[in-house]
Image (cartoon, rainbow, N blue to C red; front, side, top):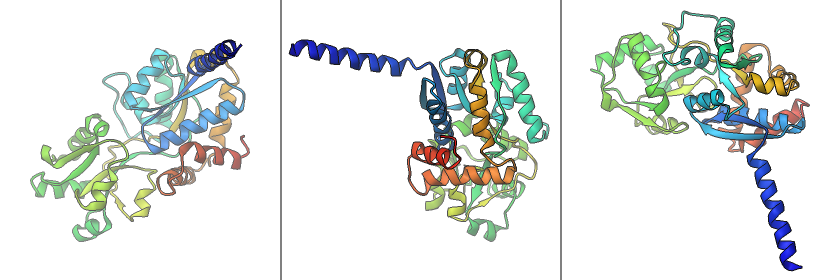
Length: 303
C-alpha cells in the first residue's frame, strides 16, 4: 500500500511538472528590470484570465527575437526602435520618424515574419548617456555633441561604461561614435552585464554610462542625461508582440493585452513616468518584479 501511494504521488508530481514545462503560451522577457516587470504584467494577467501560460526571462534582444520567430516564445513586450532597426539582420535606418511612424514601420515589416504588434505603450524607453551633475556643471556638457567634443579633446581616453549588448549593437557604441564623429580608446570602455552599468558611475570609475530612459536611478543620483541633439536614437516605445498563430488559436488574447496597454496613460510623458515608477519599485525599493506587477494590476482593477 505504501508503495502504491508513493507511485501515485510521483505520478502526480511528474504530471504537474510536465504541465508546467508544456504550458500552452510562453511569455518571454529580456534581462533588465523593465522587462522583468512587463513580462510579469503579461504573464499574471493572462494567467488570471485562465490561460495556461509560462514566463521565461533573462534573454537578450537577439535571443528573444529568435525564440519568437522559431516559436519557442509566443509573445513579449518589444521596443519599436529595436523592431525596425535590428531586424531583419542588417536592419533598417532611422530617418527621424515620429513614435507613431516608428511603431507602424516595426509593425508592418513584421507581418511577413508572422508577428503581430499590438497597441503600444508610449513610454519611449530610449537608450541614453548619463553623467554626474558635477561633471556636467564643471565641463559645461549637457548634449552628446558637447560630450563628443570632450572625448576628442582627451584623445578618446575617457572612461565609459556599456553593457555587452549595447557595445555590439548598431544603435550602440559603434553607431553612436560614427553618428557624432568621435572615438573612445578601446581600453576606455568598460563592458558589463545589464544592471551593472550604474555602479562604475556611482564610484567614479567612469565618466559616463549608458542608461535607459525609464531608469529611476537617474533621478535618485541626480544624474544628467545628455541630450541627443543630433537625433541618433529612435523612439523605443513598448508594444506586446504576439505570434499570429497564437492569436488565431486564442483570439481573446488581443483584447486582454489591449486592456493592459490601455491601463497606462496615453500621454507619453505620463506613460514614461508611470513605467519609471514601476521600475523604481524594483530597483530602489528592492521588491520582486512579480510582486510589483501584481500590485499594479490589482490597483488598475485588471485582476
